Structures are given as structure tokens and as C-alpha cells.
Amino acid sequence: MTNKIPPIVVMGVSGSGKSTIGAMLASELRLEFIDGDALHPQSNRDKMASGQALNDADRKPWLEIIGETLAEAHGHDHSLVVACSALKRSYRDLIRSLEPTTLFVHLSGGKSLLSDRMAGRTHEFMPVSLLTSQLATLEEPDSDERVLTADISMTPQQIVRKLIAELPA
Image (cartoon, rainbow, N blue to C red):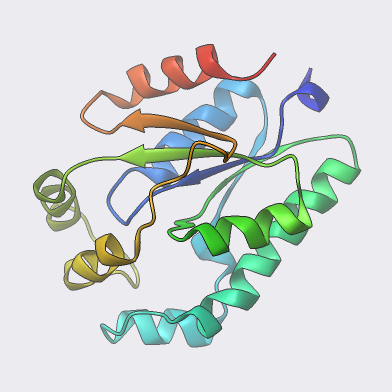
């Protein structure tokens, strides 16, 4: 079963529920889940923890690790679900260049809902102050990208059910 499911990247800005939805989706599909934040180099973690937004040069090695991780798993005939912001088209293209079969799941929602969610949690290195820069950086996926979109105003269970129903056969 798992070899028919493509590698999946659950994307969106901080507070969109990438880790929650990614873990739930992986569990339902009986796949391994990896929180992409765990793959950040320490220099990126330190920079974000100090309230500084990452630039493209900071993100490149992280995105390469994610793409290589997806490709390695897929090469061994199993898929992964990875949570990764993947905010720009170029970031998604980089991941796809390393694992072309990657399916992106875009968790989409409004700024006030995202701010409320972020204010209600503690994150190791992503303060609420970085939400504005993340929203400014976000390039909504284009119609030519392999992507499913889910509105984060739905419950996590509703989102996962929707995504499973929309997975390519």
C-alpha cells in the first residue's frame, strides 16, 4: 500500500497545523512522520529563536535535507510525511528536484486565526513576531503544482479525512 502513496510535504506558515496534520495523516496512512523543524541546522534554530527570519541561503541546506530524505525513503519503496513550511515556489521546486513525485499539502488560513493559534502555544524557535514575515514570504501554490489545499478552520480530523479522500489513486 505505501509504495502507491507519494512522498507528502505538509506545508504552510507557522501555526497552520503542519505538525499536527502531518502526524495524523501519517498515522492514518501508516507512514513515518518527520517534523521538518527537526532537520534545521542549529544555526537556523538560533537565528529564528532570536526573532530573525531566515533568508533563502539559510533555508537552502534545510530544504535539500528534506528533499534528500524524501528521495531516500521513496528509493526504498516507502513514503514519508514531512512537515515543512515550503513557503516559496522555489523551495517547493528544490524539494521536487530531489524527489519529483512529492505531493504538497497546503494548510491555508487567515492571519487572525494563525495569530491566535501561535499565541496559544509554545514553540522552540518560532515566535509569533515572525508570522507577518512568513505570510509576506508565502507564495500560494500554482495550479501546475502537485498540491492539495485544506482550510485550517476545519478540525484536524476533517482536514485529514478530506486529504485522504483527495489523495491520488
